[in-house]
Length: 256
Ligand SMILES: Nc1ncnc2c1ncn2[C@@H]1O[C@H](COP(=O)(O)OP(=O)(O)OP(=O)(O)O)[C@@H](O)[C@H]1O
Image 1 (cartoon, helix red, strand yellow):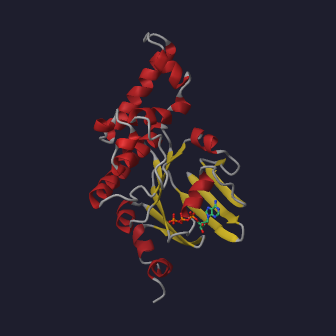
Image 2 (tube, protein in one colour):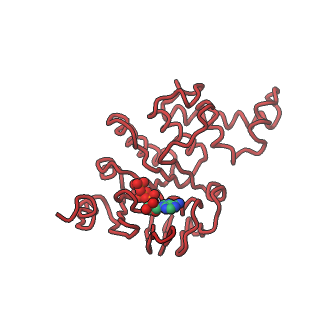
Image 3 (cartoon, helix red, strand yellow):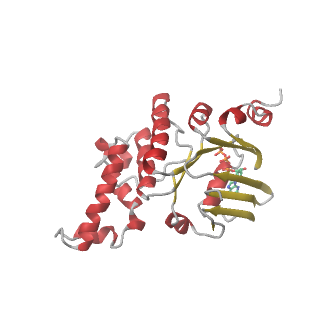
């Protein structure tokens, strides 16, 4: 059974069919990209997987469990974390605090209890230390030490993207959904992001599902690619197959 098996997924908004009978299989440990022109339905697939949208038809089996009907917090508890097209962080809080919030669902005693007990022997304080250690590891891994205590609002855009990625990692997901991880980045930041994505898969033992417009990055980093247009599957396959698919070429370059 596939790690993530999407079958016959369909959803409409008013008269607009955003996804029409979409099926795809993602295997454990893959870097799997979803591509397609603007409005093709890519983010809608993410929203269905993470419980933000409830599809009208079809099923989404994640490690054998049905996700359709689950709420976003349930998807998170089951090991699905995501980043957003437009960065979603608490901009007045520090990098550290944003990442600690990512650990929230693993906390037994809550952030407040952990940070208000002074004695290190209180269970809540001990737990808080463990969470901070985990977060420190992620900060080190993403090389954002200099941003640790700064409010997110004061950070450059590329660093904020990394903080959002760090917060998703802090949730210890087994499936990470990255929605346009390099949007708004310069070439150097994009290259760095490509290495992060590979390293994250390898070091954090996480399967990565990514929506991305930068075709160079997609072709270089993906094990498997799913292309769609107008909510309809064009092709699924490894980069060399998708790159040469006539339907994909037409969707991106036009008929002529
Ligand atoms: N909540 C919603 N209400 C109405 N229409 C929606 C909603 N969510 C998505 N759509 C529509 O569904 C279609 C697919 O949108 P989606 O955001 O999934 O596209 P996308 O492939 O991610 O596009 P982009 O690359 O521009 O982000 C679009 O026509 C969009 O306007």
